[in-house]
Length: 366
View 1 (cartoon, rainbow, N blue to C red):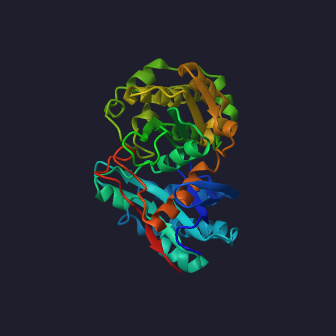
View 2: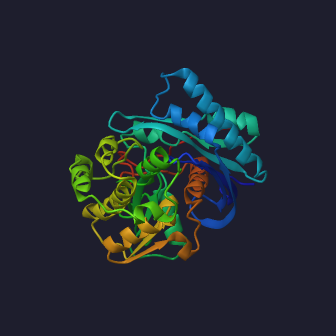
View 3: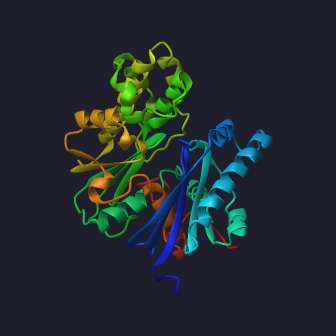
C-alpha cells in the first residue's frame, strides 16, 4: 500500500462532556473523503466519569495521583474502542482535554499515544495541538479542515457554517469553492462560547441528571436576560478570531445562575449557548446560507429552537445532509491523522491563528 493511497483511518474522540469515547472509521487520502465506515461509542461509567472529572483543569505537574487514575481510565477505554476496529490502518487519537490555556501557549490532553500504539499494535497519530501552539496558534479548534472536506464531498460551494455544540461551542464558516482548507478564504473557525457544559453541570448538581434530555427542563423555564447581558460583557466575544476556550473559561456562570430555579437556569444557559452562536456572526465577512449543527446540542429541542429563532436561514442537524452528528469529531481526527501521515497541514492562520499552515501531530508506531 502506497503512503498516498486512500486508507481506512480510525478517529477517536473523548470530548469535554466526558460521556465516553467515540470511534469512527473513515476512508480518506487526507484530502478527499472516499467513504464513511463503522462507528462505535464506548460510554464512561459514572465512576470513570468521576475519575476524569477529578482531574479536570490539572496540568501535567499537578496532583499526580489524580492524573494517573484518569490516564488509566482514558487509555483503557480508548484501547477497547481500537480493538473493535482491527482493519484500521492508522488511528487518530485526540486524548482527553483537561486544560487549555491558549493565551499562555499551553494545553493538556491526557493520553500517551506512544503507549496506546504499544498496547494495541496500531500506528497512532496524537498530540495534534502542540505544534500549532508552538507556531503561535490557539491549538483549537481542529475539526475545521474536516468540515471543509465534508462541504466539498457534499458539493456545497456557497459559504455555509458547521456548528459543533459540545461542552464548548465552535463554528466553522466554510467556503467549499476553495480547493484546499489552508487557502486564506477557505475557512474561518473559532470557539463561540459555552454550550452544553454549563447546562450539564447545572442538571448534574441540581437533579443528578447528566444532561437536559430534549431540553425538557429548559422548556419549563424563563430566560434571565440580566445573566445574558453579564456574560456578554466578557471581552472574549469582541476578540477577533481565531480564538478558543477552555471548558471552564466562564467561571462566573455558576455564581450568576445560583439564584435561579433549575428550570430558569437551564433556560438561561440554553439561550446563552444559542446567543453565542448568533453573536459569532459579527466576525463573519459573508453570511452562511445554511447552518449545520453537530454535537450533542443538536438533540436538545430547546437549544435547536433557540438557534432557529435567532438565525435567519436554515438551521438543521447534519443528519439532514447524510452526516453523523455523533461521530463527526471522531471522523475529523481520522482525517487529520492521514493528513499528518502525508505531511499535510492540519491547521492554518484562519482556523487557529498560527503564523502559517501547520502539520501538527506525532506518529507513534507499535
